[in-house]
Image (cartoon, rainbow, N blue to C red; front, side):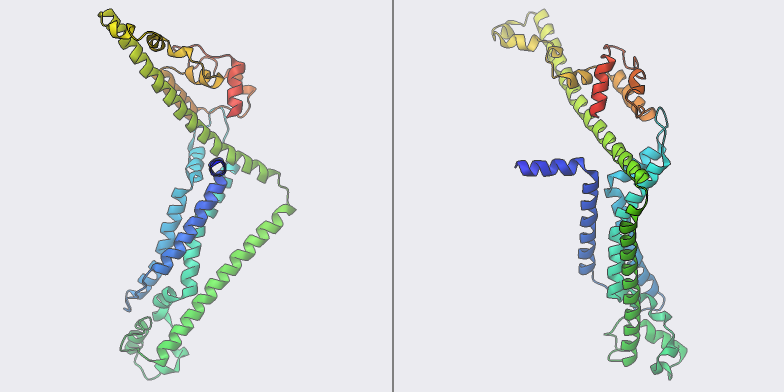
Length: 344
C-alpha cells in the first residue's frame, strides 16, 4: 500500500509524468479506435474525396482538442499569458516553452491516427481514386471519359459489380495504396530524424535558457496547484470554525433561555463545546490559514492573488502585503509569513 501511495504522490507532484502518461493513453486509444472502425467508402464521384479526407483529418482534429483539454498546462499557459503583470513580470519565453510542450503532447495522438490511416491506405484510395490519371493504365483506353470517372469512383468498392475481378481496379488500388504508404513512411522517417537531431544536438548548445524556462514553467504549474490545495485546506478549516462558532452561540442562547440542564448534566463534555476554536493550535500552518477569518478577507485575498501575484523574490515581497487583509484579525509577523511562502 505504501508503494502505491508513493507512486501516486510522484505522479501528483510531477505534472510532466502525468502529461506523458495521458499522451500515451490517447495514442493507445487512437490505435484501438482505428482498428475497430468500419470503413465504408460511398463510391460516388462527388463524395469520395469528402469522405476520405474527412476521415483522414477530422478524427485527428478531435484528438488534438482532447489532448489540449486533458493537458492541465494548457490552462495554466493561458492564465499565465492573460494575467495582469502586477508585481511579477511576464516572461514570453516561459509561455513559448509551455506552448511548445503542450503542442508536442497534443499532436501525438493525431499523428498516430494519420500515420495509421496512410499506412493502411483505405482513406487515401477513397479520397483520390477520382484523381488518378487514366493514361497511366492501358485498361482505360477503350472507355469514354464518363465511363472512366464512374469506374474510378467504384475502385474503393471491390465488391461492386462494375469493378469486381477487374485488373484495372486492382492496378489503381495498388497504385494508390503504394503512394499512401510511401507518404506515411516518409512522414514517420521525417519525425524520427527530427526527434533524433533534437535529442542529439541539444546538448551541443548552451542549456542555461532551456533549464531556466523549464524550471519556471514547472514553478508556475506547481504554484497554482499548491495555491488551490491551500485554498481547499483553508475552506475546510474556515467551515469547521464557522460550524463550531454556530454551536457555541446556540449553547449560549440555550443557557440564556434556561435550557442548560441537559448540557450541565454531561459534565466535562460541556467544557469541550464551550472551548473557543482558536484554542486548538494546529501549528504555524494553521496559524497562517486562520489569519484570513472573514468573507471580505477571503475575497480580497483571491482578488489580490489574481491581479497582483507576489514577486519571485522573498526578500522584496516582505513588505508588500503588510496590512492588506487586516480587517478583523491581526497579521502575523513578517518573518513567519516568509517561512510559509518558502514552503510554497
